[in-house]
Length: 135
Image (cartoon, rainbow, N blue to C red; front, side, top):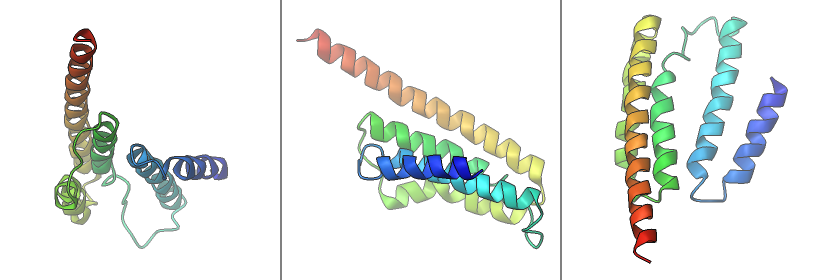
């Protein structure tokens, strides 16, 4: 586990200064926190809390989508717009005792965000092909 933390910390350190890759740094940071919480839950150190990690499945989709947006140089989202994408995770927090349902919603969320990211990449590809053919 310490090797993983070291590698993700290095990833965050190397990508943080680049505005384009900052969302990738957030994804690395998310993976580190997720692994730490999984470890704490599995070893029952966080016995007073219910499982938190299933709720974090609702965060994977938006983080990947934000990263793709930053790579294809789409106009960035405002803080309020980004918060809307993260809201389902906070709404699901009181329902952590329904683990399978929360994971199901997280899986559906990931599929939807991957479809949105694919649409962005396809649009970017069409524009980049069109601009290279006009030269």
